[in-house]
Amino acid sequence: MLLKKRNSKWLEDTRTKSWLKIKNWKHVNVILTKFDQSNGFLNGAIYKEDMLMEIVSFKHGLSEEESKTLIAFFKTNGTLVAKSIFEIPPSICVTVVCIDFDGSKLREPRFHSFQHHLEVSDCNWHQMQRQLNPIPENVTVTSPDKPVFPATNITKDDYLYYLQTVAPMMLPFLQDRLLTVIRYPHGVPGESFYQKNYPDKLPGFMTTKLVDDTHFILCNNIESLLWLGNQLALEFHIPFQPVTTEQPTEIVFDLDPPSVNEFGMAVDAALKFKSILDYFDLTSFVKTSGGKGMQIYIPLPPRKFSYEETGVFMEFICRFLVQQYPDSFTIERMKKNRGKRLYLDYVQHREGKTIVAPYSARGNNKGLIATPLLWEEVNEKLTPDFFTIPNVMARLNSIGNPFKDFRQAGERQPFRTVLDQIKG
Image (cartoon, rainbow, N blue to C red; front, side):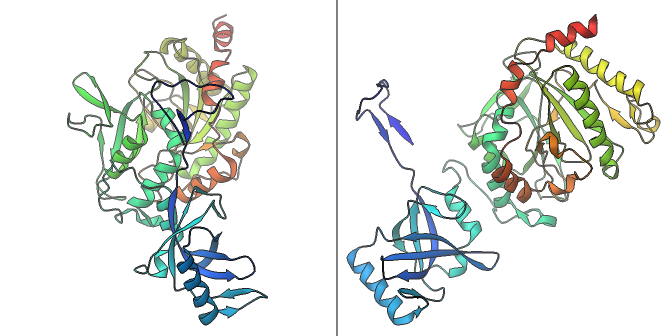
């Protein structure tokens, strides 16, 4: 973390007290497990799925008296398991300060304090995640243990931790957009309702915009996202442009099969779309809807194209696919007339209409996530049931964010050339 004096300027290759690098220390509770007499290091662990997982080795931070007490305890009550290593059963809890967790070990750990009041079961994976990622002090959380998605054992606290994790990827899509949420005040399944309008009295960190007597929230920071999460806003729906322009900043094709059992139709449709968009040299991105379908995004440079122009393109592509594959696709708005064909809804891409945001949960039993994908994942093995909150968080650690270069790709799109081709 960097701190600076308000009026100071950056001076290259110059040390100054006007700019200070401060380490953001975090506190984590662990169980002492081992002492290595050869180097003086203590090992600490937490419980993960009822198994002890060693996450830290440290020696600094203890006073001389604390160090002597612990060494004596290990030698008196421990078992010599190696040449100089004593091990004790889980019994002593301590707090360690660190700067982060790298996936296997705490970074730059130091002893902080004993925690005699804690049970060893309190030192667990979930608690460590919460300590490493504390809720901002200005956000009040109520009923953290409330079940939100009982089918997958997700509580409100789990959901809030998910929002904290995806915030860096999700907030750029919410930024300055008139937000509509679907709230589930009692969790899923249960009563739900759309909410656009909010009262004037909101926390100071929240921003609203009055449009036609509606106070829309602009979810522009982590505090706003978590405040909405605490209200059990599970679905986040956004328009195709921010409030700073009347022009769309992306095109979104919504691939809507008849039911979740025909999800394979959405996969097939996505690949057909990809071939067409590649032909036009347009960079595209794809995500699950979190429900039964998929959505294809084409980012655009801001303030360049109107909804009328994007509508011409979308209608051209959809009608072409219906013409080429009449048994697979339809643009028929009446459900009863669609049969078993996949519906291509280009009419919904208009000012004021919304689409579920990337990384938003959905209000189904498993709380499936509208998940950005790599194009190589779009194949016959793809299933929407995989994209639960735990799996999406694991994906971020393994493959990162497939929408990472979304806006940069939009700046480079040759969309004007494509429009000229279509109109010509």
